[in-house]
Length: 281
Image (cartoon, rainbow, N blue to C red; front, side, top):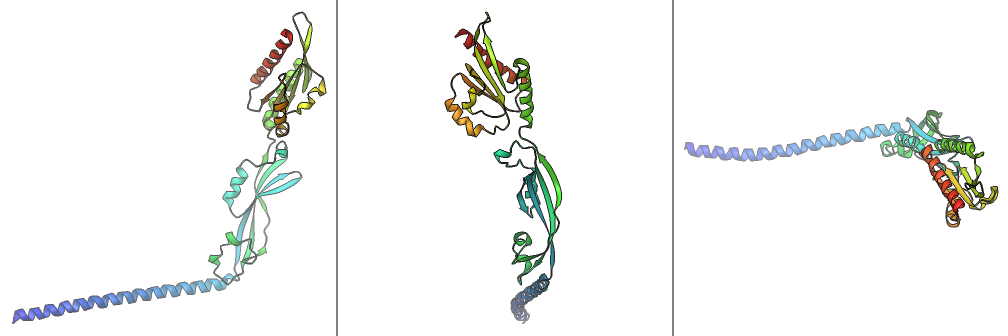
């Protein structure tokens, strides 16, 4: 009798446990669903409140610009909200047109201003971030344009400043030796003081037009020395000169990184070579 009662109780408990688990499972789903509904309702209500206030919301927004200036022109290199991009452009070597590389009146300025905008749409403002839509007047109304303020400034020197110093020193050396700065006629004599011919030496900061070689007198040999970090006439005359230059015409090219003594040595070696050709021809 006792055993049968125990079996009945055991079966009853098993059924109750299974049904209880099902009930608890259903309750758990119901509660979670209610929580989700509550969260969704809170989220929707919060968005509604925020959206209703967007129409009257004044947003302060900072913009940056990088401007390349000369005494007679100004060009925007950057305009926008990204300070990192603005600073990268400000600090990078400028992309300067070739005809301006030797100017000494160039500068970069990084500026900033704070504008005020009003959001115009009925949509959620978070779907239209101001950094992407500040210049779209259908999304954001510019209600106040701030004053531009200088943040950083730097001068861009003449690219040939370094090479000009070397050029001046070399010109000064040959003026002391032959009498002139840019063009010198070097007369060549043998051991008996018999005149054998001459060498024309040109020293400049740009490639010459080879057809002007005889402008300062006709000589047997011609040496053109170009000392420049940037040669403004190389693209114009360089290729044609290479095709038309004769064996008695040479060009030596240097820049501001070259050593003064080595430049003088290279020029003198070529002068000596041409002098020997004249004496022993």
